[in-house]
Length: 502
Ligand code: ADP
Image (cartoon, rainbow, N blue to C red; front, side, top):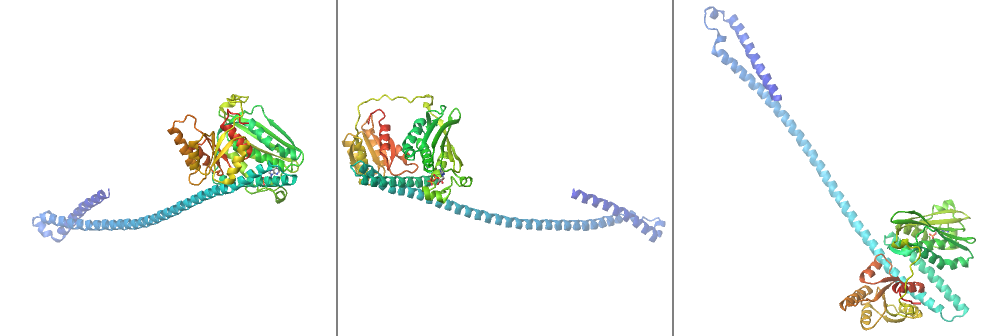
C-alpha cells in the first residue's frame, strides 16, 4: 500500500515536472530566442535534446526522491531493529527472572519435600516409639495385673485383701491412662484401626452397662436403660470402639453424679437401604457444666475447671478420644448440659446394616459337644512373668498349658505334640510370632492337614496394622495384653463357638 502511494506520487511528480519544464522552456525560448523562431528554424523544445534533458532531469529528481525514500526506509528499519533489540533484551531479562524464580521455586519445593520426608519419618519414628513404649509398659502391667488377680484368689486376711485391692485399682487406673495416651497418639497419627464385623448391638450395650453396674451400685444411683424397638439387633461396624465410647461417657456420668442416676437411651434416628443411624444418649443428674465451660469440652487435655480435676482427677483426654472415634465411625458427638441439673452426652454412629438384621431373636447355636471341654494349649511367650500369668489364667479355666520361650521352640513343639490352640506372642527372640505362624501354616499345608490349629495372637502392641499383620500371617484371632480373665474366656468362646468350655 505504502509502495503504491510512492509510485503514484512519483509518476504524478514526473508528469507535472515534464509538463511545467516544457512550458518554461517554451516561454524561455520564445522570449530569449525569437529570431530563431521567426527564421523558421526548428524550435529547441521540439528537438530530441529537449526531451533528453527532460528525461535526465526526471531521472535525477527520481533518483533523489528514491534516495530520500530509501534512507527514510533504512531509518525506520533501524528504528524497528532498535525496538526489537530493546524488546529482546527486555524479554531476555524477564526470561532470566522467570528462570531464577523457577529455580527458586524448585529449591523451595525440594526443601519442602525434604522437610515433609523428615516429618513423615519423625512421625513414623514417633509411632514406632509409641508402639515399643506401649509394649514395654504393657508387658510389666500385664505382670502386675495378672499376678494381682491371682494373688486375690489366694487365702488372704482382710488387711492383705485391702492392699491387693488397692494395687488392683491403681494398676487399672494406670492401664487406662496408658491406653488413653496411646489412643490419643494413634488418633493424631491416623493410626486407629476401624473394624467392620456383624455384632449384636443390644447385647453389646447391655453387656457394657452390666459390667459397669457395680459403679452405680457403689454410689447408690439408679440406672435406666431404654433401647427403642426400632433399633436393629444386629449391625455391622466396630463393636470394640463403640464400647469404648459408651464406657467413657458412662464412667464420666457416674463420676460426676452424686444423687439421682443415669439413663441410657438408644434409638434409631435415620436409615437408608444400606445404613442405620443409631443415637446413644447418656443422661445424668450430676453436677452439670456451665455454658462457658461447655465450649472448652472436647479439646485435648481440657478439664472444664481445675477444681474439677482436683476433686475428680482425670487427664481430659476421654472426650476428645471419644469424639474422634465417633467421627471415625461416621458419626458425631455432642452435649447438652445445665449446671447443677445434669448433662446429656450423646453420640450417633452410622452403621452398615447387617445380614442378620432381619432377625429379631439371636440365633441359637446347636452345640456339637455338650460336655465341658478342656483344651491343650501351647503358649509361645518369652517373658517369664507373662508366661506365669497366662498359664495360671488358663489353668484356672481347667485347660492344660505348655510353654515355649520363642517361635522356633513353639513350632518344634507343635510338630511333635497334639494341641487344640496356640497363644502366640508377637515379639519374641530368635523367631517372632509372625514368622512362627507362617512356618506352622506352611507345615500344615505340606502335610495337607484338614483342620489347621487355632492360633491367637497375644501381644502388647496395639498399633494400626498389627492385627492385619497377625491375620495375614495366618492367625485366627488377636488379644492384646494385659488381658482380663473375662476377655480370655471371650476369646476362647469365639475360637470354639461349638464347644462348651464352661
Ligand atoms: P477426664 O479423663 O478428665 O474425665 P474427659 O475428657 O472424659 O476427661 O472429660 C473432660 C471434662 O469434662 C471432665 O474433667 C469434666 O470436667 C467434664 N465432664 C465430662 N463428663 C461430664 C459429666 N457427665 N458431667 C459433668 N462434667 C463432665
